[in-house]
Length: 517
Image (cartoon, rainbow, N blue to C red):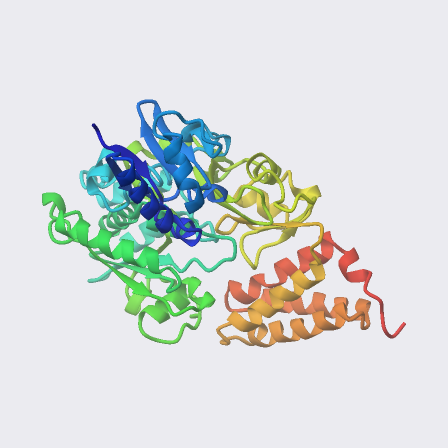
């Protein structure tokens, strides 16, 4: 009898709800039923409300069951879930689940399909095709291809990736570096973690392409220490790539050499800012550097350095494999390609949705997320992490693109979207923005270090109903100072959630009883 292939994710989200225990019990039950099986620990498909998601391979495709707990495993075998598919937890073909079917997966095309550490799987699904194509081109042509694709930084700033690469290519230096910013610290974001755990070779390939394009032979992944599973998988994947000459000397006989290693952070949110990250990588305290000079000219140890986010680098392989025009054909305006949106908070169907730029927040919230988990009305959505704007229902029809969000007074950031129902107190959320900045500021510049603390104290007075009008006027002045005077986006963006909360939800502030009136 042919072995039945069963896929159970080893993604951190799945592990947190018992995927290892489910996998062990599936193996035990299979032995009890004399069923030959092969369990493949894949990455997550991104449907996090269904984790642990168990898939079984059939002639018609993979059939999905979830969320599967240990208590469900015996009944799966009693129902012969590999043949009959009539179990209550069965969702039919994974590819036909509405949440998944309507996506446009380019960056995450392999995530959840393959064994993350199988080089054979990676090659089967077009892995390293992009690097092979790049090595046949000139470095300048590779940079131009990335520029023509319209790919922009997925870390938040949205700077054109190809322009950054061309700057480093043109810089005169004996040594250049590629640094991947994998310090994914924004609340409600998990796309970097998902792809590092589910498709690590795509990051390795993207960084090797970047190295070839700009003349760098060394690359570093700055990984947050809170991602131990990603660290383990990346280390193994890097070794496998070295052993098979996709990293190291004279890659695939091309004459190009590139090495890669992981550097772990130490839990500082500010090190998601590129110059603080460089300071940390150099063994120093994570303090923001003044710019200029920009890292592209003077970065890691003063050398020209490409700094890109995980999603930017893992998107590069498909651009080099299928061409700039293919990738550029997705999206709207100056936002080309796709964005992996991460839906979390008080949401019924949380997870990762990769779609072309241009869908609206309303579509994301209701078509994919199916509203709140609590069943109450959606009142507010924060887009772009803890320093992103709070948006109300009147703004849910904003198109999700860089310029489109900016025109609506918001930012897209890393693509995190966090839902709040109508029980939320937006004055408390505004206070949290100042509190967060107070804790996470590197302390180098006064507007951020002191401004956040003064903002926290002023918000406490507003919440207590103490001279509300006067203190809100003071907050307005303080926010202007932080925006204009802060050294980096940590202090410069802290006013965004505060001002948007006051503007879009004024009753939560002005309704406070003034104790002095």
